[in-house]
Length: 543
Image (cartoon, rainbow, N blue to C red; front, top):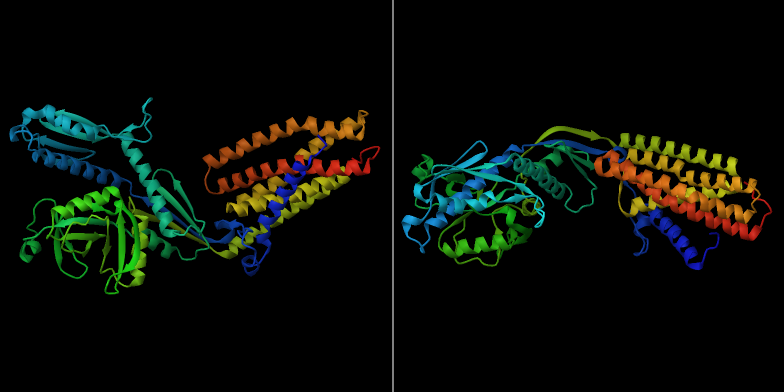
């Protein structure tokens, strides 16, 4: 165990060099970091909100809107199925099971057959709507959540959302809302924001380094709901002004002034966008260039092919921003939005469309700004605690184990360098609880050496020679060290996966510290002490 082949020596040197290289940028200025060679890492420690200062915002999500939207979608699906059934030419009209009186009430949608004798055919048409499964479905074992149940009372069919399906939809809406917030607030992924769900309908957003919560709230709160609709023609301005519209028709304002009537049925929505970016048209005016996914491209192409010569409306947040006439089928799955404004407004709209619309409305419950002065105080107090603990451990190890204590202290310093390097390389956010984890690691890092050194003392008191005492000390203490570190690492993993925010910060530094301390305490000190022992060959160990 005291013999180190060349490959082990190279491995130890590589790990130590890795720690020094990745931790070095933290001790350099920005200009010095920019001058480093391209192959060297330049990341520094990412400080959390409590150390760096920033903004904390608590949002409440209106998850009930998810249920309303799902019911509206379910009603539209029934109407579409009824319309498709009515257009069939392969069966007589009397055998076509179409529905009327489609309406929503509570958590249900009901529809009545026009021909009550076709209940079997009506059930066959609506059955796929009640067979949708949410969540992960195993083809062998089943699983997933049934979203919709179907009942029949005479010729009336009722589709009802299940409680499990509603809860799944709400959780999914919170998850999607968090992703939209992340893309809006941190589109480049460089701000190191923290997003956490709180309960079933709240979201916490932390933005380190920010100082204006109102600016962030404005960015998050923009709806950016984009839809494409068929335009209703043949109505006079008097009809529009007096609201003489058919069901499922809506009059909307136009960005250039005036009103226009659209069919409520959505042809394609912003959910089908795969990209949106600023561009310029042939006249040099700024526009938003968009691209649909495969499903959106197919629906858009089918609609434009069937409605050549008719206008269609591009609706953004309840306002018709453009209503061009379809000159021919648009089959490429892309297009442009004109009349948005200047280049700054085009850039903002592109970002909002790319991030997607919020699936739920958000209300601000609280906002809090932590100044950099508070963060500096936290850093100072946390650093002081770390320094005091570090110095105390070093003095204790030297006083207790002499030359062996020096080897343990070298390992402790290396351990701190490795922790700093790993945190910097992977950009794990360091918080005040994270500093507490580092302080705890300082104490734990020498635990293994204490166990080993005490075991070496026992072996030497029992008459073992120096080489035998070292060999047995490291060998017999190893299993105990492994057990202690594994159980602590399991606890850190549980804290990380079940905790949030500060708890996760503590768990990250503790877990990393456990892994690095195993290397420094068991491998590095053994290499240092065995090298000294082979050179000095003392008759007794100075421990």
